[in-house]
Image (tube, rainbow over all chains, first blue to last red):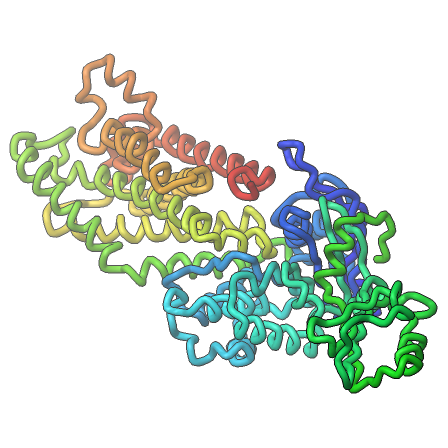
Length: 313
Length: 256
């Protein structure tokens, strides 16, 4: 795979002295979905804004498709589509005209067949002649996506795409992103919803206080930082944990019918086999065994509370 | 990709003109009604007492001034609102992230604003034919002055729209500066009619040069030499372009 976005030593310091980004370097491969996670004010939107041309960096370089965003900005911007966090649409304009307008801005000629395809894929074709002010919040957000796709970008930025939307719409957005992934569009999204990153992203980047703490494949991150919980359901309830099993961090459920055991997936020995053997030795019969991976949210909290210097980009 | 994004310019121009035609009745009817009122007040009521100015019937004499008044007001308001509205609604981001630079954005917005103003001025000219007999001595220069003035003041309006942070600010410059300048710029009289001191003060008003040049194209009469009028409007266009280029280069009031 080749890098479609190459960020090197990117920094941004505002006039007020606030340092929004510090020496960020990152390489994004063509066709991947990368989620940028971080608390409010971490620098996620600043990073996206610099790449898209909304904010001028104070240091470093960004290349999109090999084009420098400052010296070769026209070619770089043609490759990019941006879906902003805030819903910003001309209220009296028809949906289809909004999309045509964006296509024109990017220097593309009329292609109503393509615009129809985009609107149909976003379930907006029936609303093509409606003024945007008549649409629901979810539909407006989809119009923003349609506009961002109007010129067939190779890279799509989604800034908090599901902020403030209900669960059903969030699922709908995920489906849209999944379809875009299948179409080969590189997607960079920022989100507060860790579940979203876990669900959609190939890689996750964690930003805090303007620094990129790490970038790793989502599964690797979960494996590396994630802890698993083993739940052992018992045939007969226990009144207390047997003395021989104490000191292993076992917890007994209030009804005495389940034991939980937390273990580190990175450890050479998880202790599961020993535990199950010792339970059998104690004559405790097991009805069922299940495991649960800790969520990305827990991983994220671990990372931002213990900043790391190492960055795998 | 060529240096200039022509489809981008067309997209902005077309978008702005569509908005104009969406409200065509209110866009055209309002200035026409105002013009009729001016003819009634200045032409019929006052004009009855002023037979002629420098040999031109007073009703006809004020036609270039009325057209200039409309051009200035419409150019400034169309261009300032055109660029301010995306800032207000948040859609300005589109212009900043797409492959259009200051030239494309300015040509799109200013071109549309000037076009609207010229169309309205021509409608006013047509309306005036119902009230007075107007003969245009230099039609080419009339059109040239019309277009150059509309462009100059659309550029000024564009800067006002970029500067404004509220609808109040958007209104304040046209109301407090443009309208007084037009009324004091000889729209309804010749500067020769003023006492010498005020005639000297009037010569400091840039609008006087525009009205004068425009009136010359109609009647061959001018308060100041026509070449000076052309230089004045050209300088204004150049100065506004420099200012707009600076605004886009620095991101002042755009990328804050």
